[in-house]
Image 1: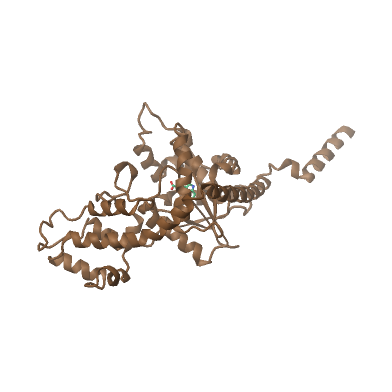
Image 2: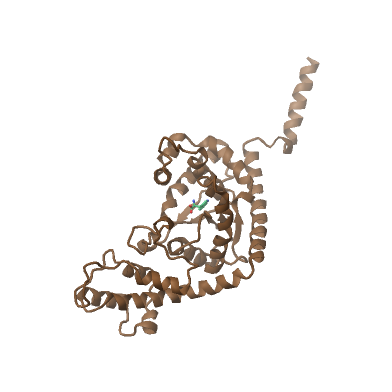
Length: 369
Ligand code: TRP
């Protein structure tokens, strides 16, 4: 059996650098590796509704943003099948059967869901916890297994989802004595910084609500402004005083994005990031110089993404055509898996001529008695 990727994002906002280093960049590398027979990238609108059901227009408006972000990062529709979750209705049917295989206690133990419940105040008495939200890990297992995905490139916070999916696969195959479903593996960034890129203000995570994000769709000017306002080292009061790297976002971003080649291009006095760090910690290197360098690095990284985005923005109808074609393909694949599942579960009554014959025979015998 070949190797198959499935992954996706909720369309609740534009994608930012945290998404990029945490997952998008890796997807493009995997896409280009030629190692995978099929790649499915899903815009998880139905999952996004589990905590935005009262604001469907937010989802509606962000589908195109996420699609543009994908295409501009280098997801190639000729190699990767991009689709919309809600269009593939087989996924909800699978979820219904998987619901039987998961206990409430098991869902309550999922640490990501636990944290998200608190974040959304679903644990408060007046709000309460919507069943749809509570169960979304089960629906996520359907997303993955419908495509028999072997590989799921995601951010670190998604590991508990993949673990739960694996349990569902084992439980299904064991209960229905089959090998219809495939156990997936998560792929997370191998670099600690890329797993959790901090916000420009030094907060542990980039997040829209904290206003500390650099978006893939930000203009050159916006990126520059955000780099200039980045949190550095509050004790680094004069150029001559020694600077600290710990918690210094400018250096964290350089760790995530800088390649040695950029020194020759933008800051030839240094050869490696270590040279630059050594000078900074020794004293004598100002934040302004480092920020200017980081800005150049970020612009170099983002320029090709920005150019591709501008191109696709001129063809929005074409982007929707890509999504529609991808969704049709995805539906075909999910329908095939669902029919195998239903056969294994012995609920494929009309496809099973032997069932009808055997029962007809049994009843005929009963008449003769
Ligand atoms: N939960 C993922 C997120 O919030 C999105 C998602 C939905 C997903 N279904 C998926 C990711 C299946 C990987 C596989 O980003």
